[in-house]
Amino acid sequence: MKFTFMRNSLVTTATLLLVIVALIPSTAVVEAGQKCPSSDFACFKRKMMPRVGRKITVEGTLALAKLGWIVTFDHWGVYIYGSRDSDSARMKSLDTFSGQTVSVKGTLRYSPGSPAQTPPAASIPEHFFFDIAEVTVISPRPPAEITFREMRLRKPPLAELDFDITLHNYQTGPRWFLLPSNLGPGTSALLTKGGVDAVEVFAPRGNGRVIVGHFLGTGGFYALLLPGRAQIRLRMFPISYWGDPPDQLQVEVISAKRLTIDGVPAADWFGSNPTSSARAVIAESVLSPARMIGSRHSPDRKEVKAMIEGESRFTLEVSLKANN
Image (cartoon, rainbow, N blue to C red):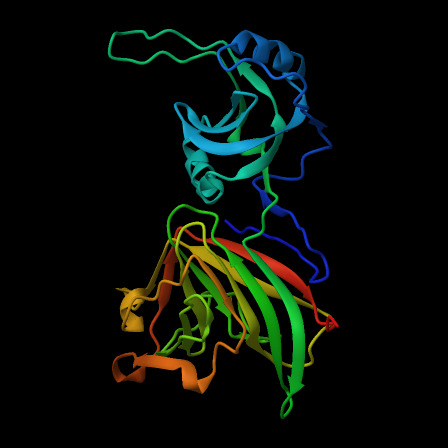
């Protein structure tokens, strides 16, 4: 499932949209109002029952609970779950938002719950819920921020672009972040075509440790492994553009739980631990020849496939007008 996040480089905040179905009509936002005691579901029920059957927006923290995902707020919350076998992929797609503050839009529903039919079975508590097939989940925190800094025109049709990039891993576990090394009319989305035949590993200097893998080939890309809750800033990050650069450029970023190269964990290709620091700021180019610490080629130098699991794809729109 593709997550699309459009961002102008001059804007400091943005919204990431996960669109599970077609656009939902305008909704009423549930206001916090008077807080209910943590043990008083009756109070929460009185507030929510008038909204049952209406399209509303609730805001809270997304977490896994007894019946599925739940958006917690006001000491209680609203569940998100499906009733069809085909809903499992949609439920899995919410993994990337686990533990994050989100807004959820959908038609509010109510279930009175049911007692256990037999002693081993668990009872179902009274609750409010959204159907996974008809919700939109919005996260206000983008996983990446990109600002254009400089363009150097080379022999046509090549232009070398430099960006300032901030990467955020909001998950508790490590994640691979993949960025394109080449863009232009003839290039494809990350990992959709071509393969890689080598990697060059760089350790640019700065405040904190950052390891960058520059995978080469017709499907080449950059790869960085960030620990949980990490944030790193990269200055003058290079991406080549083949063709006439547009005023607005779309840059795809992938966050993935696992990355393999020819079936081998990507970390093995780095030759040492590729994990970056939880906090780092790098001011020099990540491809400085003096900072290359290793390399590896595929067998017979033939291209092999790069594969990812548990990924989220984000597309950022960046203005190519330099910020002064």
